[in-house]
Length: 208
Image (cartoon, rainbow, N blue to C red; front, top):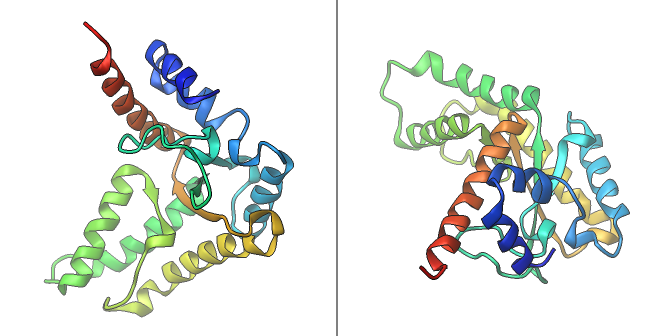
């Protein structure tokens, strides 16, 4: 499906159905010449992370062939484009969440240093949206790092799982990054909202 066909579908279909049919399911543009590469990718990630392979999907421009970001739709997928991966696993998400709570509870009544306060505010947003981005978690300048060591270890394992994809010739030169969602509903809500914004923009472009 090219961008024009996608626009027509988006204008005539509920955005949640479009996510299910075109974003989470169906052929993957980045692997269109070698569809088996997707199985290699997710089996590799599943072997390095405590997740099942069938809970890993490709999204974004690598999936459809054009960007689904409301700010850059429908920029074509090309050399240098990210390969965005969604991982859905409640237990792994809760492991991150639980460590954050163990970090915060003993300190909730004290004035935290600004780096710690800002870091916790971002984690609260992550929990609200039901997603973590372990690639981008930073711990420099935080206090009580011994409490956060399990979280740092989880994030390091995540980072290494994705980085080690470069040992396969199929993925060399690809910037593969992942986002962890607690449930499929959380992932669906995020991607449906992006399509909603695109749909509204397309509707505003239509002649009266």
